[in-house]
Length: 155
Image (cartoon, rainbow, N blue to C red):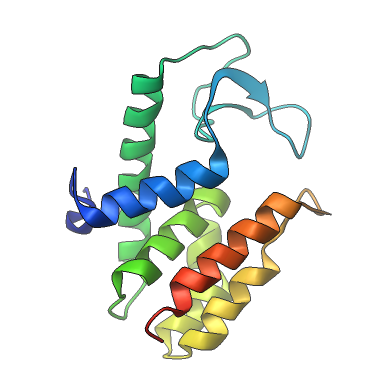
């Protein structure tokens, strides 16, 4: 079920698309995962479902995929976060889930700490998630810093 907070054309949806899209980047041609140098193949704004070598998508298709995926990740966050979230914290957690998966995000210390009212510690825990395949990536470090900044706003 789509998240009502990410309604099409809404401010929260635009903020989520800007944050995620900015860090994922747009690549219209399928490419191998940068961490593993192989599968899963990735396209558009980090999409991996059903992507095969040689796939190509238009910008409009990529934007539509991002919008649909953000709805899925928002729904995942809605299911596992048990406390009210200000918009920017919600967007930070959606971005985090988009990158590590709903299962990873929901099982993380980030969500667990936020759910028990330890917001600052939960937001700080985002910074631990800056590796892929055991390698620290500067882009992931920057992403986690921005997610932390969003997460802490109003804390």
